[in-house]
Length: 305
Picture (cartoon, rainbow, N blue to C red):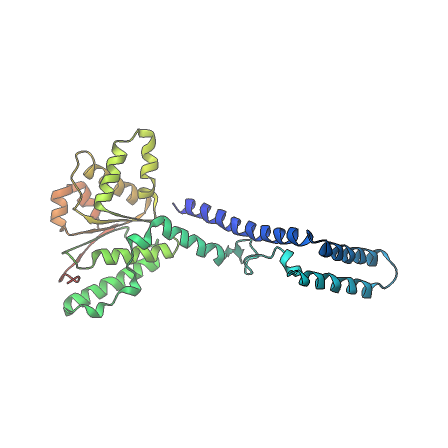
């Protein structure tokens, strides 16, 4: 996903540079269609060439011709700078790099395109800056939620170096599971990493599409959910239980992502026991693996109320 977005970004950046150059060329073409400008320009060029090939001091003649050329340009609403193809970015001079690092002109556009590709503004509207835990009335819930948020902020700061790759936020309705996952997803995209954020129902639908597609097409359909830097499956347990699909493909994706060291975040109203009963030991084992996974329960009242 990141490679696809970067290719798009570089293409857009080159298009911006080409547009800048084309504008300068168009200005020159438009200006020199005016006979008076063309004549004044020729006189300036001829004077400059004569000065270079002559033993005499012709600096005054050249300066006079230059001033006459500039005066003529101004008369028709132009200046010499209109014909110059200046770099659109003064930091990198359109090379895309500053001191061996990607320039902000490329990086900012990449993040913008990455957000669009990840649909982050639609799927993960909540950010850490939006969090006002002081509004949680229950002190115990406020302290627990605050500690968890602080812990997840540190997780994002270290990302992708964090050892724990699978996080499960479980708890009752409205305890802030999706908001926390959204804040993490948004922060990680802003760091330049790719996030796939789907509901459990959408994930199940995609896996059904994979299951019923020709074998040659399956890898392409599975690519983003397996290769993205972070996969968020929201509200696990609300999806339909489809034979040979729901459990089997969830297991496949979890196994592939853990093998590749990719982060997976799951939100659910289910308890650990519920997950075991619904999805079986193999999935439960991967979600509760002490070395690579962490199940975090978010207790308390419905914060939506």
